[in-house]
Amino acid sequence: MADYKIKVNKKHGGKEFKNNFRFIGKVSQVNKKNQETESWDKLPYFEEKLTRSEKPKARRVLQFNIETALSNNLKVEIAGMEQQYVYAYSKKHNKTAKLGWNVRFDKEKWKDLNEKIKEIDETYHLIEAPWDKAKELSDYIQDDAWVEVKGVYEFEEIAGDNGSVEFKKRTITSVLPIVDGKIVDKDGNAAAIKVDRKEINYVQDLKSSEFIEVNNFSMQLGIKSTYQDEATGDTKINGVFLKNGKERSEPMDVELIVYQAEAAEGKVSMANAFASLNTYDFIEVTGQDNQRATYAYVDIVEELPSDDPFNDVDDSQKETRQERVVNGDKKGLEVISYVQGSLMRELLTEEEFKKSAVLTNENPFSGSVASDDPFNQTANPSDDPFTANNDDPFA
Image (cartoon, rainbow, N blue to C red; front, side, top):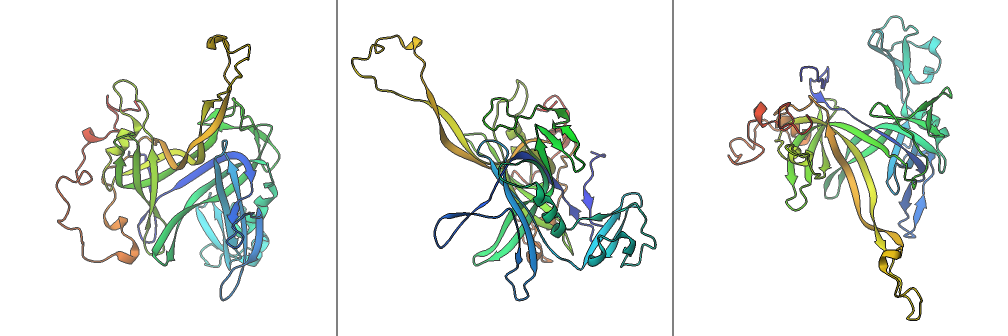
């Protein structure tokens, strides 16, 4: 655990969690319901238009669906407006320079507006603004193009008539084309696609039996509660993601699911292990993002005429045709594994889980937690379902 790091904000000292995703798949347009016609309209991949506000500003948006597997369409996007400032970062000096917006592409005119960096040398590189990136990445996006998309989940909160509504969006950080099953970088160099550091033979055919889905995410989170379904054994995780805020880190709700799967003899299933976590525990999870229909194959029953010569042929000599039918759906963030060494018991606090708007000096929960509350038990290493011992399902 000593090697595991959690980012801490330098100004207010709050923890800041991280996440990322990587998808490879086929591009298509996002559909939006037309409220007037009740039909579905296809949205343009790239658009620049004015915001609907008292002082309208130009805003660029790049958005599209990426189909990572048959019917698993995930909407990804990046949006931005022109700014007053941009920033350049030097990994060598570990410093960030504040630059004027209009000189961002003219390095000779770079000057740190904070006046902390006297000389901006060649080691400083522009941190690309979403306004510029949306336009640049749109060059790769067209109908049926195959791309690799990397990005982060951004959690937002908007005020509604019935209170605040939280949602997450998949924000793009990079896009690269896939050609002949390989990733092509900005310089035109092709490289094999890797999953878990191993090269795979990526087939650009969603219906092929050799197709391998590339769809993964990782996320740091705190545990608010877990619930395990008695019938299925699946475990729902009610988590908290601490995102960067001006005065403090802001807690955002996130739901994840761990599907029950048979464990090896003497081992604990992933769903059972996650069900044992307590409130305020911390862990980093990995998994896949689902927005898909699920399918089953059923026999096609044919009624043969009474005079059909094959009526009396033994069934073992007949081949029954099958058709694929939708039998349900699978949605949300599915946890498949976790990062070893990331589990930290009771790392987080009640205050960190509270929204800024409801923070008070008085603790309304003081002394009110029931003794049999499964999320109020102090854990020790022997309780840890992930600890490295004989009961570790991952050992």
